[in-house]
Image (tube, rainbow, N blue to C red; front, side, top):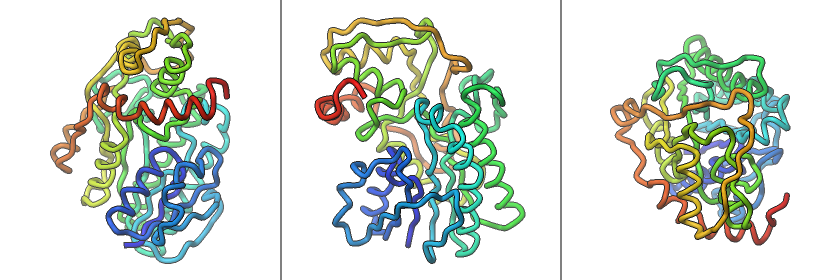
Length: 315
């Protein structure tokens, strides 16, 4: 089975490449390195079944016959999509279109990496796939939220009108090794600050919630969906919900840091609650996460220690 992973030098994409290679699949990794990093795929450098191509999927391309297309090309962290707003919208629109055309050409299965941000600041809790969301279409986060919502609509259109075999995964907050130190996500911010002896920055009152899924669990769920016959969106995330303050406390305990909490103003449109209903994943895929937050942070600790020492606390 020949597989294309766009955005394969990114955080989740690189772990997906590892898992696909471990299953014995030849993998083509396409990434323009806007936010992806070659360090994320360094372990595959001498793997004969792995090919890296530096390519912007927002331009039409053809990498030859493939059996699966995993479309992960997009800035995904708050700092990245705020900085690269236009590129984020292009990845969700032009990039998705080009990848769907490739899948159609070779009759390949197409899997879109969508996001829990499709639910916006949700008025339903926990979030089921049937919930349409509460998204500000012109707010500062809209470049990411609406790019993914459009990508989902385009994917379903290719399913209905072009008979492409499609999958849509809605990814919730994911963490683990290879997460960038300065990407603006909760776990990477807290781990960097704790290990650098800085105060942990909490926005708002810290009572907003998130649900954190260890990357190994996330990839297992994505692969289970890819191998299923399910065409509707499926939430893949950890339903164990934490307030931001609770997450900060777990980080302090795992790192042994004496850092304090520092409060700042909550950014515009920042979701107050985020927790997946994974009933469909359990029923359709037989999947649910097995790694809890404390264990996952423990397994990520050496990576973050090394990253802080190598890159430093300041970008």
